[in-house]
Image (cartoon, rainbow over all chains, first blue to last red):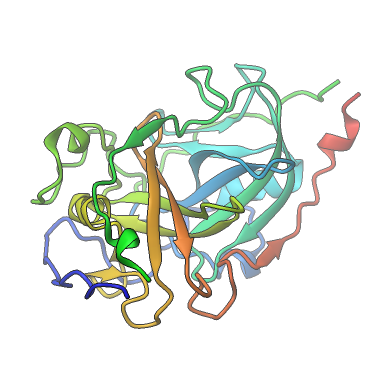
Length: 146
Length: 146
């Protein structure tokens, strides 16, 4: 039997983002799709990238409306770089292209699942996936289940 | 042969977030882990949730440092709700619990991959996964490859 849930206590913080919808940057994205997006305070949605064949999760990047438009209409995964503050087409410099097979939007509009044919390593470090750093899970609640 | 990359042109925008590291909210998270996080402007990292057995991507939610601490130490997936501005333990109200099997951090510290044992549907709509809305990919560049 699951043990009781952890206490849920809100921690008000001045770092908390606005709850009102964030306006889109100017873009060529289909307005019907743009209307479904719920963006971070900096106008972005998370793009989860997986290998279309194995289903492996390769990386997470960020898209604004225009990056999503370019991804859908070119078939090449295109992101917004938060650090460089510019668009980047995955593989343009590395040769590690991502050919887009499908894109799905999640139920609340703040994340995309991009299935790609990945050429070479997805991670700039040379790893196939960016998620190569395991964190320690010390909780044992799952062992307490019946 | 791949056709030339799409043009990459930066679009400066006042909606663009800061590039400086975002300070953490107060939390009990291991400082060594906290130091690796690169947060959104509202202090969050994206948590990609997948089924530990099938590898299926179920949902994306958000964690601040304290939510990650609770997830790692309780073994129950715990998120920060951007809309309700409070912590939520997945399944606390729905019964659709997520027992955490592993957590991995990505190479640049702005996303987590949480592998869970999912009880019932991950999506609040009743779908097993939140990514049930396909968007049209009209680009045909991938067909042009050799």
